[in-house]
Length: 241
Image 1 (tube, rainbow, N blue to C red):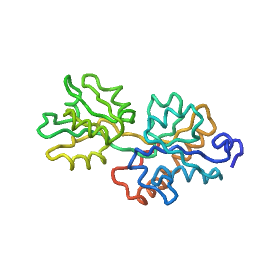
Image 2 (cartoon, rainbow, N blue to C red; image 1 turned 120 degrees about the horizontal axis):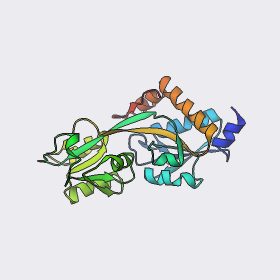
Image 3 (cartoon, rainbow, N blue to C red; image 1 turned 90 degrees about the horizontal axis):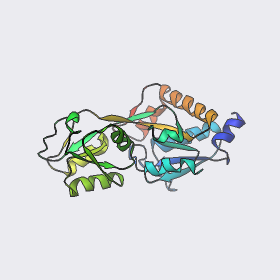
Image 4 (tube, helix red, strand yellow; image 1 turned 135 degrees about the vertical axis):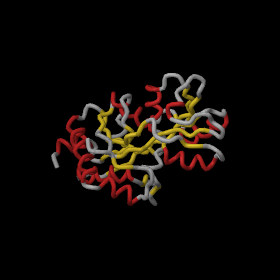
């Protein structure tokens, strides 16, 4: 392993891996020591193994906080949804997994398809700072986005204010629909949230290494094995870049 690469990606001698705890598909539990467990922590651990350095997990409660810390020297690599707004300070790989994002609508809703949601008067509950919130912020033209803190917060807001739609990741909405009798999940998707590995800019050599690692991890079946190991439903391997 090139020492210059190691010193760029893990200058302290330990790879500090930022993990978004809010993504319940990529973080599925905790180890006995309290470290995050799941597909994302395992990807980070494999990167550390290849760099031949120890790993230290840096957990964040929301993806927005993780992204905001990119300029604070708080972490060396971050596993998070790749979004243009975040790419201003983070050099991202191509996606290693994808998660379908769609809407849940309440009982009796007249909204039948994805295309019906972006209309005047429609109010959409969304977890503020999530990757799909950033997508909707760029693409919604007529409906109103109503933001809450976290996934549970957006569901609670959806109920409390009797909003017209709840934006979310399909796997999470599959559990939410069971909590609200008569509600429906709309077919299709408004986006697929792409989960990637990033490093704070400018770490060009490190970014190139991470990009190669992700492509090899997809092609070799590593990503699929991690999905299978943690028994995650609703998460798929992203296509090759």
